[in-house]
Image 1: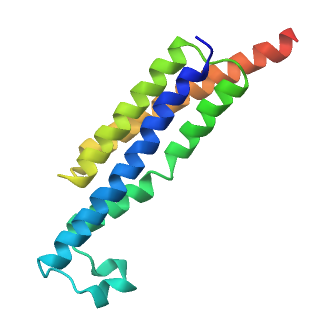
Image 2: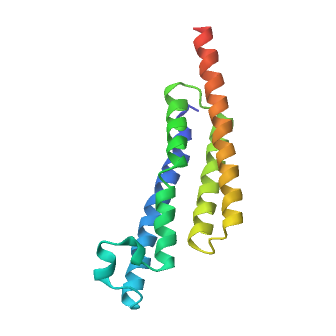
Image 3: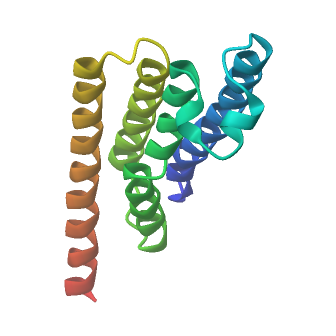
Length: 143
């Protein structure tokens, strides 16, 4: 293991964003085709889209919030040379939670479940932060 394995969950998270953009395009196309919205109305106003489109659009916005912290932590673990099996498992755990969160968000959008998944994913990031900070500190002290 050379420490870069933690980048695979990062790539999987990036893939999730790309998947959501395809889902958004499909839902927008379906909404226009079904006559649920007017192209003119939606050209400059995202609020004109139907709920199915808004759910995906909101989810895409979510992908540029806490996942950014995850990306930075993983990159920091690689650059700092502190990535190990535990961090990789936590990174995959976070990634699976993000996929599940996205699924709930764009389907039922059941907020209590979505919130629980979000909180657990945030705790995973917090544990990663603590581990990386501690390991980097120990490396600094040992140097």
